Length: 242
Image (cartoon, rainbow, N blue to C red; front, side, top):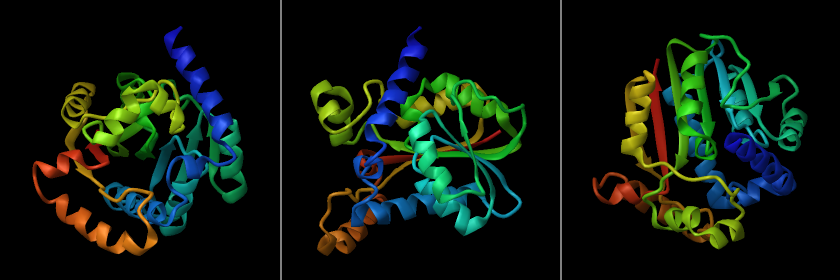
């Protein structure tokens, strides 16, 4: 029943934030928009997304990344979420995309269906082992997995995910966590993934004032190249192949 409770919590969370979801997630500010575009570029480049790609987006939310990727690549995208309210927003934006109400830990798709499975800040809402098993199952042999997730080693994220009243205040759902890249890589290998690569990135906070964005962005990209310092970046890119 624990999983059922988590799903119910996420559905309720989607209802609560549906009117201002992108603001809650930090994508609506000037810095947030720059972060979102960089993240979308990672999905496109690592996923090798193009017109012939059959892609599954997990946790599409308001279709912010669906839209960026669709118009950049015209891939065949199936986008899923557990929240009907958020899916409705996606359908209004992109009538040509196949939006579906799905549980990422119990996907309805057949084995070996997709070339790529990707998603932004969604795995940390799920039970990692179940989600990875389902992603592995629906990927074609040689298919690619690309996700961007919050980094638990980032000081703000560590506090946000582990102090209940701060988690609630900042708009998180009750069950969400974050990723520590080394144990997550081991779990991916146990699931069967190959060519596994996880790397921390992103020191640009959504609340950086517009006048400082260029400076902070350049500084952050420099910090990403420093081995120990980069471990406290805000996000982790997750990549692997089947």
